[in-house]
Length: 334
Image (cartoon, rainbow, N blue to C red; front, side, top):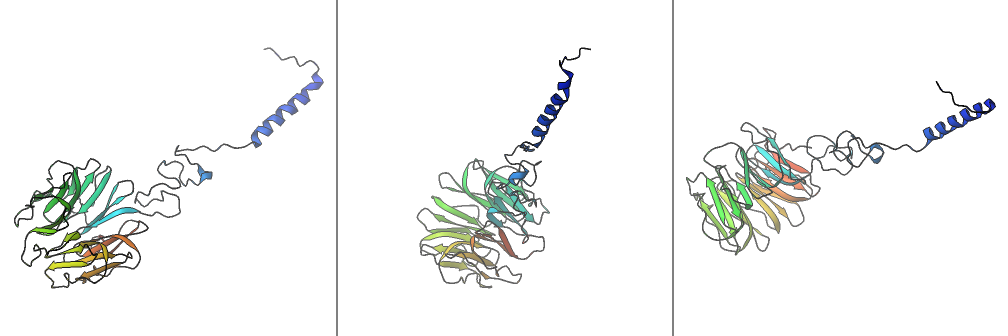
């Protein structure tokens, strides 16, 4: 084996000392942290789970019980919420579907993918994907899940029928038609709402038009100009161009006696309704035997009335639900 010739062997201790010094300086130099999951954040940046690329400061919450944005809490932020019969659904900012409550027909097991809208019905749901096509899951009956395969701007899930507005503002309905609820009139429309056995819509002139079951006048829409209409079981409500509420149909539980004021959005349920005032307060009226018409305080941007529960979207993006909770439909994910 060749041995290096260091010449004067008295220099050897000095050489060894220099090498040790270099090693020492290298060991004490700046440490480069590794981004284990390659999400652009390491532990010193506040990444609370550097093995999961979906978890980092500022990440979107998945509503899966995990703290995704590393703020110390597993928050669930949604952009819309829809209350059905015994379940509820919503959309995250990323377009993921989230459902909770009754699941006997798979209505609370949404498909994966990116969606732009969701509507909860009676043990089933309708959603719009990024192509505008209807995607359904849950109970299959009366053909209410057999939507025509065309793009839609908006969709609404009723009890046994569904309706949607296509790209030309024409209403299409499918499913049970025993009361004519799936026979929309001709014309162009801005918005549609399916109820239990009737459907209501606002046409492009702002007039309210309803069709289907009309035992209590729920399909006999009044004259006037409306910003939005919503169909319940035996009653319907709308927001007039002035912002005032107007309801028609059965009023056995006060469901057709709305409060005064100016409102921005409304939703009708089985025998109750809820709406948001211009100041962001939720007001509900009608049946309240399970607390479905007793909303919490706070500022809201959207509300949805279901069969016997209601859900609202706070201005923070968090969901609050109230009313019947027999299947967990009023317990949104956190």
